[in-house]
Image (cartoon, rainbow, N blue to C red):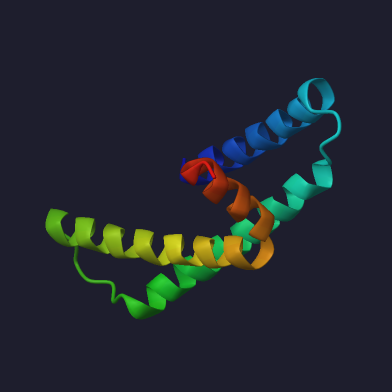
Length: 102
């Protein structure tokens, strides 16, 4: 079920990007989306591998499951921030300027 849901979400996202490019934002290149999708997917896989290597798999109860989820989230967020800082400096500057309204 999870794999089917993941495939459906990816398909829907690709179709949404195509629709947006064709009808709303014609100047935006579709290749940029696929590049971002591949980079974020790669960093997600690396994050899961890092989490599996660092955090031992134990028999989970609710508390340890929540703590494991928090640690996994922190690792993924750190990897995404690194990705944004390395590959998308202009986007980070735009977001920072929007937040702080310079």
